[in-house]
Length: 372
Image 1: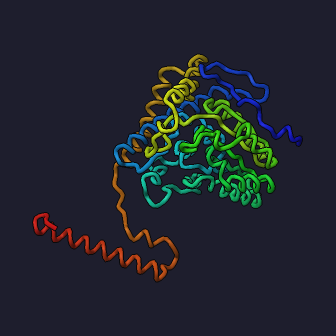
Image 2: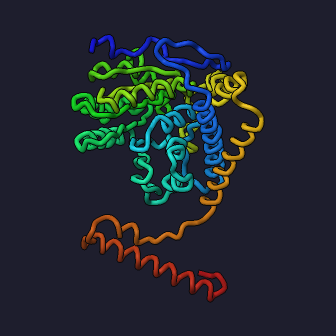
Image 3: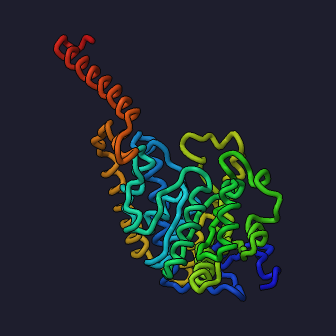
C-alpha cells in the first residue's frame, strides 16, 4: 500500500447536506431508502433517550448523564454497521449506541445511576462495559480483537472514543499494537470539538485526527459526523475491510456536543452561545428527515410510529429508574476477591457495627417520639 493511500481526505466525506440534498461521491454510495429509514428511527429514538436521561438527572434518578445530543448519527451508525458476531467498545457518552445495539435502556443506565456494576450482560449483547476513564477501552478492544483473530473468529471490534482520548497514552498504545499485529479493529473517533473544556486546537496540531493513522501504518478517513448516511458508508467500508483481513483503520467523525459535557459542567465558561446555535442547522435528525421527506420515503404515519416507539423507550427508562434499588452494603466487600482478606473483613466489621448502631439509634428515636 502506498503511503498516500493511508491519508484521509482533505475534507470530510459528505453524502447528505444540511438541507437534505444529496451529494455524489465517487467512492461512497448513498445507502438505500430502507437503511436510511432504519437510521432515522434510530435518530428519533436516540434523541428521545437523551432528552429523557437529562430529565431523570434533574429528578435525581440518574447521578450523571453525558449527553450525545447532536451526535446521534455517530451513535446510530456505530450500532448499525456491526454484525451479530461483532463487538462494540463504548465510552461513557455512548449510551445511545449501547441501547441501539440491543441493551435494555434500564440496564444501560445502571452505571450512570451510580450502581456498582455495568448493568448488562456484555457477552449476550457483545457490548463491552461503558468506560469512564479516557481511552482505556481502546486497549481492551485491541486485545479482544487480537484474541478473536487468534481463535479464527470472524469478528470485528468497533472501538469508540472522543477527541480528548486521542491525547492519552492508551490511544497511542492501542493504535500501535493494532497496526503491528494487524488486528480487525476500527477506531471511531467522535470529534465533538471539546474534551470537556479543552478545544481541539489544544489537543493536536495535526490537520485532522484522522491524519494520526498514517503514523501507525493504517488508513484514516474523515466523515461528516452529522450526516448519518456518510457515517454509515465510511464505517461499513472500514468494518468490511477489517473483516476481510485488511487490518485496523481510524475514522474521525466531525460532529459537535450540543449540550454540556455532563450535568455537572457549565459549558458557558468555555464556549459562546452563538457557536452552539450555529450547529443547530446541522442537526443530524433534521437533516435526514428533510432528505427522506423530499424523497417520498417518510410520511406522517411513519413519523408518528417512530415517535411512539421512542416514547415507549422513554417510558421504560422512567419506570426502571423510578424504582429504588435494594442495596446491600456488604456487596462492597463481597466481590473484591474470591476469599475475603483479613483487612477487608476488618473493614466490613467496622461498617457493619456502624450500621447496627445507626439502626439502633433510629429505633430508640422512634420509641422516644423522634428524638435522637
